[in-house]
Image (cartoon, rainbow, N blue to C red; front, side, top):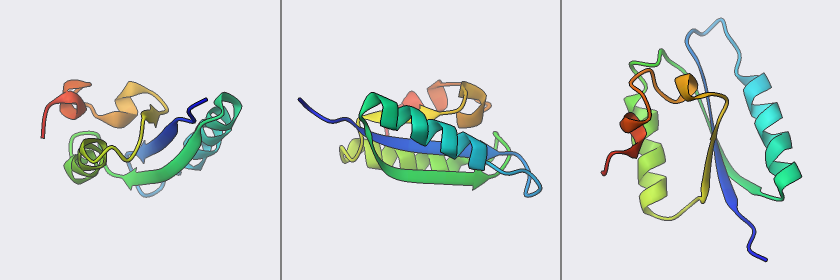
Length: 89
Protein backbone atom coordinates (compact mmCIF):
# COMPACT_ATOMS: atom_id res chain seq x y z
CA UNK A 1 0.00 0.00 0.00
CA UNK A 2 1.35 3.40 -1.00
CA UNK A 3 1.17 6.13 1.61
CA UNK A 4 0.28 9.50 0.12
CA UNK A 5 2.33 12.57 1.04
CA UNK A 6 0.28 15.67 1.79
CA UNK A 7 1.20 19.33 1.73
CA UNK A 8 -1.09 21.57 3.78
CA UNK A 9 -1.55 25.20 2.83
CA UNK A 10 -3.21 27.49 5.34
CA UNK A 11 -3.96 31.13 4.70
CA UNK A 12 -5.58 34.00 6.52
CA UNK A 13 -5.99 37.53 5.20
CA UNK A 14 -4.59 39.56 8.09
CA UNK A 15 -1.96 39.28 10.83
CA UNK A 16 -4.76 39.46 13.40
CA UNK A 17 -6.18 36.16 12.17
CA UNK A 18 -4.83 32.70 12.93
CA UNK A 19 -4.69 29.69 10.61
CA UNK A 20 -4.04 27.16 13.39
CA UNK A 21 -7.60 25.74 13.16
CA UNK A 22 -7.06 25.08 9.45
CA UNK A 23 -3.77 23.31 10.17
CA UNK A 24 -5.06 21.22 13.07
CA UNK A 25 -8.19 20.01 11.30
CA UNK A 26 -6.39 19.27 8.04
CA UNK A 27 -3.65 17.36 9.91
CA UNK A 28 -6.35 15.34 11.68
CA UNK A 29 -8.06 14.59 8.35
CA UNK A 30 -4.75 13.54 6.78
CA UNK A 31 -4.08 11.21 9.72
CA UNK A 32 -7.52 9.61 9.34
CA UNK A 33 -6.75 8.98 5.66
CA UNK A 34 -3.36 7.48 6.48
CA UNK A 35 -1.53 10.29 4.69
CA UNK A 36 1.82 11.69 5.86
CA UNK A 37 2.01 15.48 6.08
CA UNK A 38 5.35 16.44 4.57
CA UNK A 39 5.01 20.20 4.92
CA UNK A 40 2.75 22.96 6.15
CA UNK A 41 2.89 26.35 4.44
CA UNK A 42 1.11 29.12 6.29
CA UNK A 43 0.44 32.59 4.99
CA UNK A 44 -0.85 35.86 6.44
CA UNK A 45 -1.58 37.49 3.08
CA UNK A 46 -4.64 38.49 1.16
CA UNK A 47 -5.75 36.05 -1.53
CA UNK A 48 -4.58 38.32 -4.30
CA UNK A 49 -1.03 38.72 -3.04
CA UNK A 50 0.16 35.23 -2.15
CA UNK A 51 2.06 34.50 -5.36
CA UNK A 52 5.30 33.56 -3.55
CA UNK A 53 3.48 30.79 -1.67
CA UNK A 54 1.74 29.58 -4.82
CA UNK A 55 5.09 29.52 -6.61
CA UNK A 56 6.56 27.48 -3.73
CA UNK A 57 3.68 24.99 -3.94
CA UNK A 58 4.08 24.70 -7.73
CA UNK A 59 7.83 24.23 -7.36
CA UNK A 60 7.36 21.44 -4.79
CA UNK A 61 4.73 19.80 -7.02
CA UNK A 62 7.03 19.90 -10.04
CA UNK A 63 9.72 18.14 -7.97
CA UNK A 64 7.23 15.46 -6.88
CA UNK A 65 7.51 16.35 -3.18
CA UNK A 66 3.85 15.70 -2.38
CA UNK A 67 0.86 13.80 -3.74
CA UNK A 68 -2.05 15.69 -2.18
CA UNK A 69 -2.49 19.44 -1.69
CA UNK A 70 -4.82 20.17 1.21
CA UNK A 71 -6.55 23.52 1.74
CA UNK A 72 -9.35 24.53 4.09
CA UNK A 73 -11.41 25.78 1.16
CA UNK A 74 -10.59 26.95 -2.36
CA UNK A 75 -10.77 30.63 -1.39
CA UNK A 76 -7.87 29.97 1.02
CA UNK A 77 -5.72 28.84 -1.90
CA UNK A 78 -6.24 31.92 -4.03
CA UNK A 79 -8.89 34.50 -4.78
CA UNK A 80 -7.82 34.07 -8.41
CA UNK A 81 -9.39 30.62 -8.53
CA UNK A 82 -7.89 27.16 -9.04
CA UNK A 83 -6.22 28.23 -12.27
CA UNK A 84 -3.74 30.24 -10.19
CA UNK A 85 -2.20 27.02 -8.94
CA UNK A 86 -3.01 24.63 -11.78
CA UNK A 87 -1.15 26.53 -14.48
CA UNK A 88 2.24 25.15 -15.57
CA UNK A 89 5.45 26.59 -14.13
